[in-house]
Image 1 (spheres, rainbow, N blue to C red):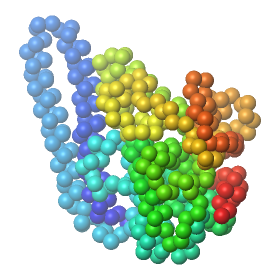
Image 2: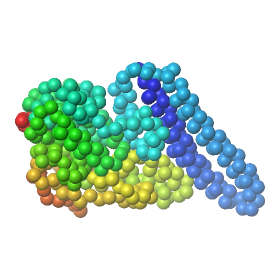
Image 3: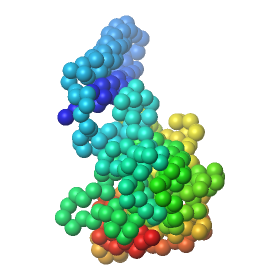
Image 4: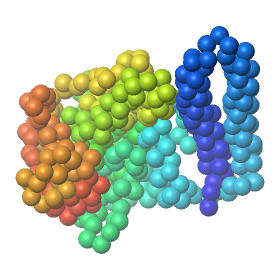
Length: 402
């Protein structure tokens, strides 16, 4: 069942994307094409061009108004279409996670109903980080915590079983004697911002946990590994109490040196701007992806406060130089498409989304500084399968023992 908030939020978001992204791109291509055509007509074409421009401008203005009105109409009908007390379905949660992970934040500002704050989750429900709520949600709380941080366009559902043979990592941690903590957050926000939110959440949890916390292990999948590192940076700078309790961080296919896919998107946008005025609007459309995705270009850990123009320039952005945190064991789990490590597909695509050099933080021109210790483990699994792979479960079963 669709909730009232979802109907209202999706109506406004759809209108915003159509009116502020798609329509300007179409208008820009239209203008670039007609500018080229009228250039050949010379002075004789000026009257025709003036009439054409006036008509087209009116059409696009009318379309803009229509999109805005359609969003408002959909939002006003939300109470008739949606269910006020309904729980969001797994598909709705996934759709919201995708929207937050892909779209630029300014497009989401008009749809606060779809916002994804950084929250602790238990069986899909929010758990406030106060003592009463934590005691109620975790009646069997232990002093050993394993925190699971999902990746881009995902939610805590990424740790659930999907296929036969999958391993539930939270269940492995619980079986070993630890308490599993699952978080949900909007992955389109800057990695540094989400890292700061995670650090604050863990600080609250440690201070209000029902029993004294003795040890913490963090498991980050893909972007979640970068968020975990960013959280450690915040905790170190602010002298958080949870950081000395952190013993291990497990990174599952984390692009420490950046993602080749985001680099390709950045280069494609730059090329489209250089080719011709006709393709420049396509670059603008492509560049409407979220800051979180852009942070994957170099594995940026702090919020980039630079201008959009700089962020979207050729391979621009903040290149991090933060070393591995001292006194914590960093487990780098590297996936691959083919069992043979020497297979050319592994060299080109890694686990499909992250190459092995990025996953281990050691490339030809960049290398994460000393710290740690650091342990590398290779697994025959694709990027998404790493979050449920038996080999990762075996590793975690040893780390989660109190």
